[in-house]
Length: 107
Image (tube, rainbow, N blue to C red; front, side, top):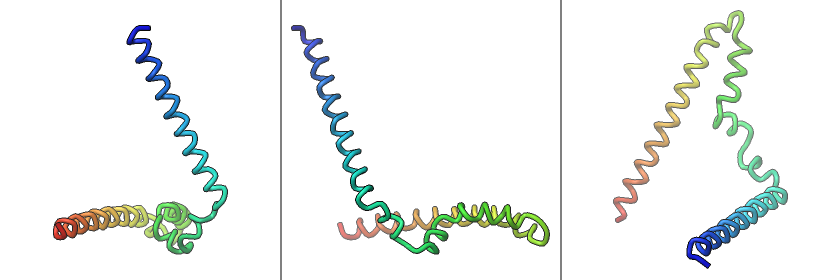
C-alpha cells in the first residue's frame, strides 16, 4: 500500500473520530438542556433582563410612542439606544483594562 493511500485512510479515520466526538458533545449539551430547561431564565429577574437588552423593548416603545405628543420622544429613543450601547462598550473596555492592570500588578 502506498504512503498516500495510508495517509488518506488515517486522515479519514481522524475525521470520523472528530465528527463522532462533536456529535457526542452536541448530545451531551442537548441532554443537559433537556434536564434543566429553565436554568438560564431563572438567572435574573425580568427587570434585569430588560435593562441588559434595551434594544428589544426600545424599538417597540419608539413605534408605540411615534405619533402624537410622543413624537419628540420617539426621535430621541434611537439616540438613547446608541448611547446605551456605546456606554456598555466603554464599560467593557475599561473592565478589561482594569483586569489587565490588576494581572500585571500581581506579576
